[in-house]
Length: 91
Image (cartoon, rainbow, N blue to C red; front, side, top):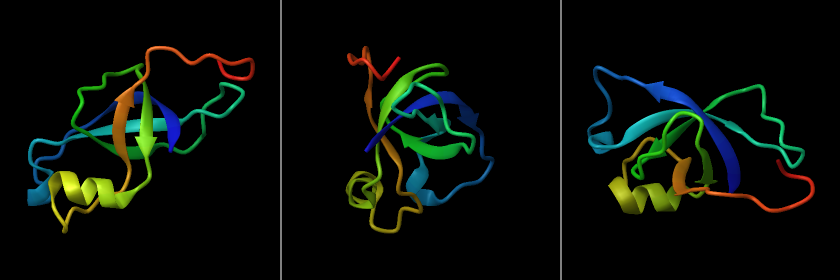
């Protein structure tokens, strides 16, 4: 699991059938010092996270398969929308 900041959404005219009703978000991993990673990742979202939100991301593909089916073409999923992070090294 890791924290990520949502930077936008992906709109797909056609996508895999198992992804119906699932939003595709663009996020960047948040490092312990509060900085964000250079490379964006695509996240599957069923919780309604929005641009600028900090989210908790699961890297467990089994969770995605349980949510949307065994043939789901994804692994990273939003499992929580973060209200606040307490700690010295995280902004």
